[in-house]
Image (cartoon, rainbow over all chains, first blue to last red; front, side):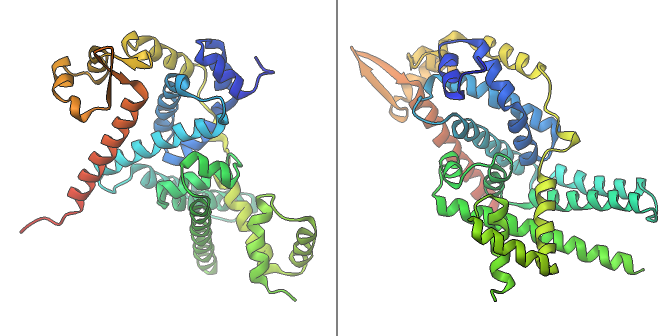
Length: 202
Length: 148
């Protein structure tokens, strides 16, 4: 099983081989789960979506055409599912996103727990936590489509062409999405650096 | 001398591993003397690190696969073929079969040997289109200002 490519495994899955499904799962669960976690910023929701995506993969295996590559196909299913779930949740909660609020509180908690800055080690940890919080807050603020393009690039190291194929978008659009996403993350990071410096003056 | 703007544009390209060796060399030399560009580089590193896998991102264990298998086993065999009869489509959409016959003109159907059949792929695409339509209806209804 291990010697087979993803595409060959999917053909086996298509013929009803369950062990092929398990091997595919082992190969992609780490990347897929990270992608889903970053898309929705909530572990329980990501776990739920992981199951939904795997279910859809198994059900859609029959319509998979062996000409295409497996990974864009997999992430296409994952992204579509994610965007649907996020859109319906956004409708329900009317812009009030719980994961984002939770993130900001998490940053506060981290700051409180580490106590007053003094020891350089503790300070380093707070800063790392703040950077992570700033980047992830900015990530949560991106349009979900921009976010998916950026994450496929950053986490899966997909080429622009593969991302275009996965998201069914022109390559130029993909480049724009990634560029805008990175720029927003960068600006949020710079803003947090400025706040840090102001805090340090006191 | 090339200004920093050019080098900054190259930093992401380098992070993506898409820089020619000679350009990468010039960028390295510039970074050695330019603190502002080094700060920019460390922002890119920080963004990368924040997006990447952390200790909280350990994927769930084998129980996920077991649950998915259980869900797959629970799906009625009716909807697993590539071509569906009206009865199978009714079971898949969880509506009485009469609804299917009544709304044949809305559905992607075909006739073969005097029988109505549906391609599962067309039905799935059709469902996707319905979802999009419904979503845009809900969204435009939500965007409309309330009458006073």
